[in-house]
Image (tube, rainbow, N blue to C red):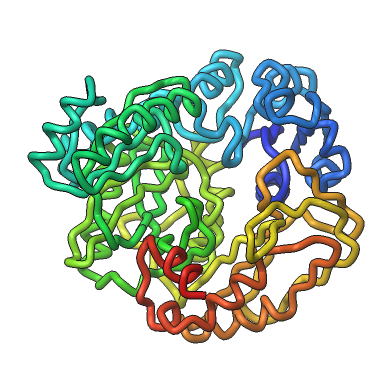
Length: 448
């Protein structure tokens, strides 16, 4: 087993990694920026090192500073969490070349799945359904127009080198595609340093369904069921649940098999997520693979009882995963995760500041992952996620009831949070009846 893990991240995910390490008797090193000296992960870790100024590019994205911190503290492994350097293949290579263990997939898998065009080609060769579109990055506007004419509008342009909505443009006709092509390339260049884009057929009302993957160094690859991630704003997820009400047992088995095939095509090791778009007619298509632990991993933990962070650490140490062999992981009940952000629930404007009072909900089926405490000053430099509230029930109805109760109990005074928005969503009839797709929030906000 690993001896000492440096956590190249901050906030709630750093706290979560520390908890997993403690249960496995692994010492931890927290790195932090000058703005995060009082962050909870710094206090909880066995050791801490300040690696730079408040902005991420001078601290959490500073590869040389992270590696230096690992070397001076004697860490033998680095866990990147999510965000920051988590899906940076160059960073994973440097960690490996420095004789450290990277708690994540091989850099080759990160690089392959980070290039969306290459990822589409790899999983397609493994028999995984993909949307009609370009097999390689587009060579020019004329090729985009030709392909769009062949597969039919609407179509969407996406950055080959990244995701998160950047470099993404939708076109419903030739005029819109002509106008969108250069804009998408410019955005891709600014966001990822690579202007290449590819084109796909656009599904107008799909669900976003992702499958949790675990793969170890002994050749075993399994999935732990799906998560419904259709409730999102500007391609950023707000609420996730498991299982999805849209899947039959047969569909779950088929999509899970495809997710495993995609992971094998990437020669994947560690925890990861294979993401699909599910059409109204029940057909599904590969969208991308996230080569890291996901923000929403607790949803899967709640319905399977599997500690994904501990499995990830064991796999990184070369051990076999502890799941029973040759058996599908059973799904028990229903879980929902609410991402609690420090932002105005109506305007979505960031709301950094001092947490004057904090009351966290409890009771049956309630979990909170957070780095908040009363008196903590939320800095303005990073992502606004401050907590994840997860509820579990024997079925979806009970999970929704527990979600309402837990959100009503939550108190974060001194700042604005998105909790009130989540509470309203739980009373929405479309949500209650499971009528979800990726445009749910656009309709909800427009109608509200």
